[in-house]
Structures are given as structure tokens and as C-alpha cells.
Image (cartoon, rainbow, N blue to C red; front, side):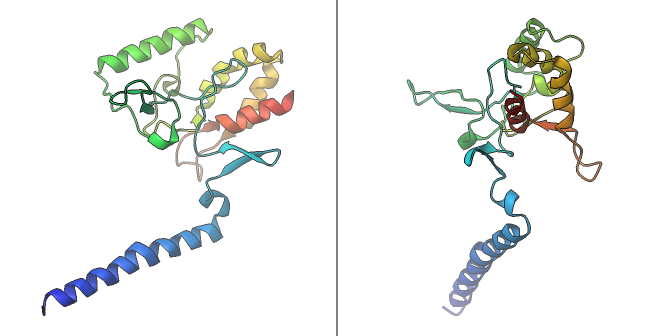
Length: 198
């Protein structure tokens, strides 16, 4: 008992400190200093939440910019022992875990290249147009990816391609502090700006 009592007391004390008090304090500080980010960077249109700037959405219509491929899955409704593709399924975040020698990955990338070529893409294709992110939920694409989609979007909407390209360039986020990360375009915010052009 002389060893058990201090061990139980320390366990309860550190559980309260590191499992309850510390996370609550951090959440409170984050909410005060970064209220938008701590709240999930929700995006509103006409007072209604339409998404988050932190989680991608699966835009598939030709009149919208498309996100990068997503590897997220969901249980097959016909057979719960199997999974089916469910792009941008935020409840099941994760990468495909396919390595560079994976036949499935090579076939998927080849199919993606063929699809992009049919869509009129020429030259070298950006990696983010063909590969998934580690989370499967990346809300951003590269500016090169967005610019390659501009002709399709302009044609589908009957807009001047130059105006669509200008819109893309105005939505390019630069690396944090000028050197952390890559230049990127948030697909949801770009598509909302596109809808506002009308």
C-alpha cells in the first residue's frame, strides 16, 4: 500500500493536469489568439456554412476547378467488409499508402494522365494533379494545376480565359513567412470567387 497510494495519486494528478487542464488551457489560448483557425476556418456564403478552408471538397463539374485526387474511402453500402472510394471523406482521412513501385498507383497515375490529356492538358503535368495528399483532404492545388484547368472552366462558363487566369493568380497563397511550404490555391475559395463573377 505504501507504494500503491503515491502511484495512484500521481496517476490521477497527471491525468488531471495533462489530460484535462493542459488541453483546455491550450484550446482557450488558441480560441483567443486564433479564433478563425481554432473554429475550423469555416467558409460562409449568404450566412450559411458551405465548407472549411482546411478541408477539400470534391468538385467534379467542368465549370469548377477540381481538387487533387483524394484517397479517402468509406464502407461499401453493399458489403461492409469492403471499402469504396469516397473522395474527401473527412471522417476517414488518410493516404493510399501506395509506394512508387505499386502497380495500383502506376495504373491510377496513367489513367489520370490520359484523362488530363483528353481534357486538353499539354506538357508536363503537376504532381498534385495526379497524386493524392497524405491526408486525402488537402484543400489546395498548385497554381500550375489551376492554370491548366482555366481553359476548361472558361469554356464551361462562357468566360474569357484571361479573366479566369487572372482570378487564379489573384488567389495564389504564397509560402508562410516567404519560405515555408509551396505556393498554393484554395479550391473552395477559388470556386466561390468564380461563382461571384457570374
